[in-house]
Picture 1 (cartoon, helix red, strand yellow):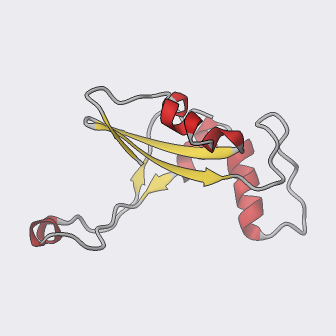
Picture 2 (cartoon, helix red, strand yellow):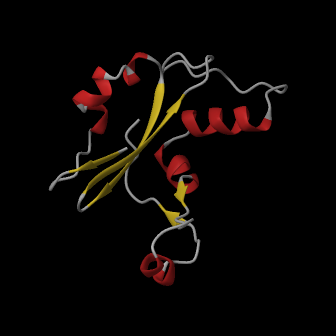
Length: 116
């Protein structure tokens, strides 16, 4: 979702539209990217084994690799998450002017705290 406003919202999870749409009724991971023109957000429903932030299940040997990685990310400290959370910008399609100036795909480290 894209929320345009003159002052980006740090606590985007408090946005009335998200509450009214029921997005906060299930455990949801919200990625909030703040830009000078507003917020761009992505929403991910967390798996059924996730109850709350204080009760993340321990990693099991028989967990699939993606579940192990998610459990490590969710239970990691801020430094751990910041070292692994990256954005890779990529323009798939667009007007010619955009395609001509599109940046090459590259990792962009996210600096600053992740609000969890």
